[in-house]
Image (tube, rainbow over all chains, first blue to last red; front, side, top):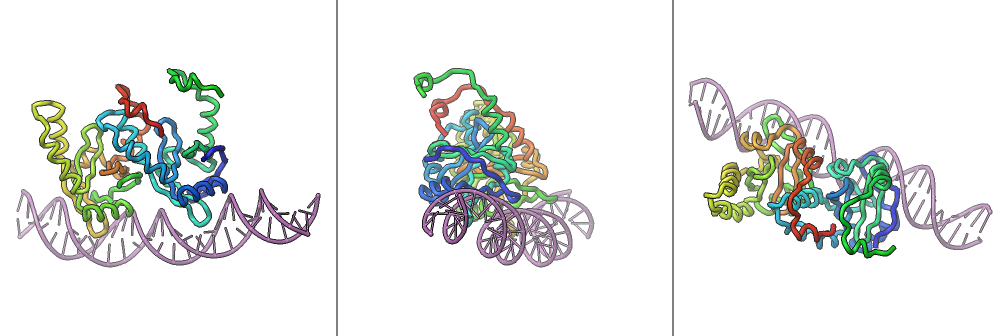
Length: 147
Length: 147
DNA sequence: GGTAAAAAGTGGTTTTTAGTGGGTATAAGT
DNA sequence: ACTTATACCCACTAAAAACCACTTTTTACC
């Protein structure tokens, strides 16, 4: 579904033009109806076609909310989830609270991730590409991987 | 039901305007009758549509109250629970005791959490988003999750 | 390779709706 | 009865949505 990345810009009103190819995919798979929310592990946003979100949402809602980690995920993912629609020119208006969360400014990066997209501030994206090199345990599925 | 977050403000009389979309949902599901109470784990408030509260309340009341944790939950949740109604302009008056509990000042954050809403002081919310990194056990339901 | 046509991206304007503030009346409590 | 607090109402301001026009880039065809 979604692969590849694009530089995109947010205009002075907080609107973002979706690149044509991505837009076509979105229109096809969900009539341009999408849901944007917070990523819990990095300061970026997740963009789901509406049907994908409908699958994910109950799983999040069902997490045991007396557990701190689960509560954090719920708060962020449900708490920031906002349905968006394309305007007549194929743009979406990014809500203020999401802009704040992901520290979005003018220059953004839209990154395809198969069933969803990630939206980053360009500078945070570049920092992440340069710096992030996680240590810690590696699941078997990862060690077994051969690129 | 409720998702997404909004910046809201409390005016000099302690009133808070409910954002239009949220207001519509509230009017539809409970005629604008809601119950606001304390969250036991964080200094924020819970906002329930009245029917949701009617389901929850007996469960709280039935907790075994010789247990300290259960007693704490009962005292806070039942003790702060206040029915509220929207005024003609779609605003609610926030009771003083609830304002104190959640340290509400002018700038607030209203966060959708599916069947309920959370109401935070904006600064406490931002602190929580930035700082909270729960340790402790991670339930299987969480480790298995793929966003 | 050049030109024309279409599509995509960008910016601005207008209209409508939501949010804010305050004044007055009413009720409640002292 | 007087003071304080809450509800109701009206008017103003600000923000969002819809609409429209222009520039730039791409694509197709000559």
